[in-house]
Length: 257
Image (cartoon, rainbow, N blue to C red):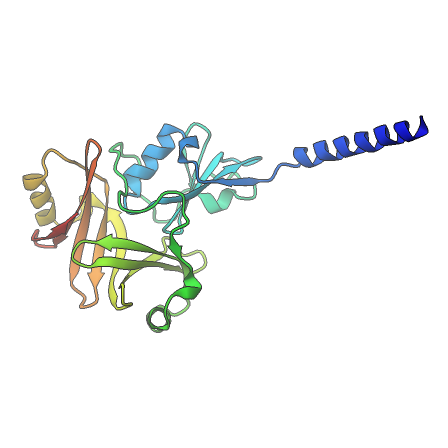
């Protein structure tokens, strides 16, 4: 009888201990299930970050945000439970309620659903920064003093083929800098995201004349190549088809994919 009572007591202690641990919920819970995001949040990412893919999602507890979406560009976006954009996701990891926006981020508010169609969703296919060649690391050290490698991944760019996309940044530097290297580690270009409305008029005229049936993402990319020439990447959508169009500043087509 005494032994039975002892076992019951031990069991009760274990159950109470288990409940206590369960109640101490973690602030963040990582997942790659993009289906958890409200439609409004998904549309925001698709519209404003067509050059990026979602690596993972943090589901938050005890925070002013419900979700933090981590992109492969090292950016983090915070959203409320109903999908409203709240600002820089890094501000919400510890339960903060700042409600601010990413410094310099004005690419939001449009409703065209465009998205990056050539990358991966859910992570797992990146390049470990430590495995990048000394050629790439030396280039970054020589040209971007004080920057660190945030992450790296493979991509495919028309004309260039397989490339290595390397994101670098400084503390509190938003947004990070995207550098593109060839498969053999030669430096190709630096890419920066900005509004499609700010691309040269000749680029807009080419898109209008040749892709009038497509929706244009409100975010485009500016490429500064190794020879300091400038090109533009425009992201388009037609139903479920997605297209990237690369052009010179004078509207001359470089390639599309």
